[in-house]
Image: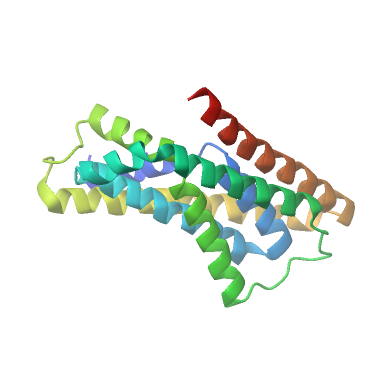
Length: 204
């Protein structure tokens, strides 16, 4: 199996479990349109590619610094999740998906990128998977590592394309009342995940 395909499988598998970014992607697709949902997913895919790059090229000084500072990273990420969750919880549902402009797309991309980067578990996931499959630095040289990282981005992006596209197909079935509940549930889930991240600081 080529390194590109292996990377794609890894990227897809790590992106697929629905966490706060998945909830955010679904909610933004319903409220702001497919482009906004996809931009959210691509932000997460970019962060996945970055962490995949750290693992594939063996950049231990970066991974070490991230792990050492994970308390502050988790604090910032948890607070950001709580704020985003409350904002989503209180948001008024739109009658139809809005046409997202460049500024809103950039904001959707940037917020998802930031949220994924502030999750130290992501780098640990990639490091563990790469080590377990023997794909750490030295496997195929720098060219092989580059193909692996490209595959990670492609696989992750494919998941977000499928999730936002599937959600878009269901958009017409949601009434304003249904969208209000989407806001409430997704806001509560995102806020809850933020609180869990903050609570983990006391435990860990």
